[in-house]
Amino acid sequence: MSDISMAIVGGVLIGSAAVWLYLSVGRIAGISGIAAQALRGPLANSWAVLFILGLGLGGWAAQLLGFGPSASLPINQAAPVADLSLPLLIGGGLLVGIGTRMGSGCTSGHGVCGMARLSPRSLAATLIFVGVGMAVATLVHSL
Image (tube, rainbow, N blue to C red; front, side, top):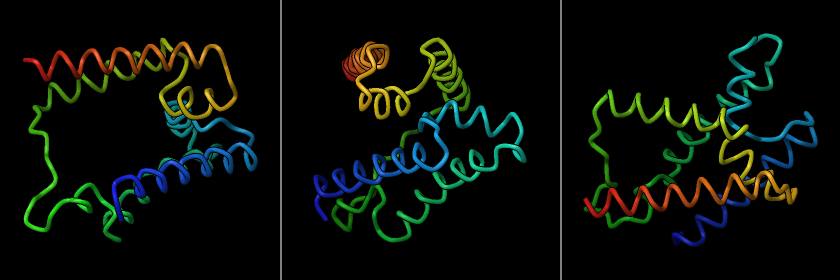
């Protein structure tokens, strides 16, 4: 399967999951909010716990079925692996967490669900996080 086909299938699956969650539970598929809900009370919010588990299990199943990051690479070439230190990973995770709190949502909540609902707040948030991401990637690549 080509990279474009895999991207289209992935986008359809993400969109379908967001619609399903909204129609079945009445919730927006914002991962940071769902994760916070799962941590508040796993027994009272079993749907949130199952959703978060499904994210990991879905990625694992896709890898087993040959749809992982190395699926489109030649057989003799491995997928790139970032060699990052634990403090850098923790710092990055904290910055992402702070950003999702400040922005009242994450890329999935604003970028997928909010944009689909034509939310002005989500449009602003998406433009900001995509713009900052592009700037940081350009800066890191130039160093």
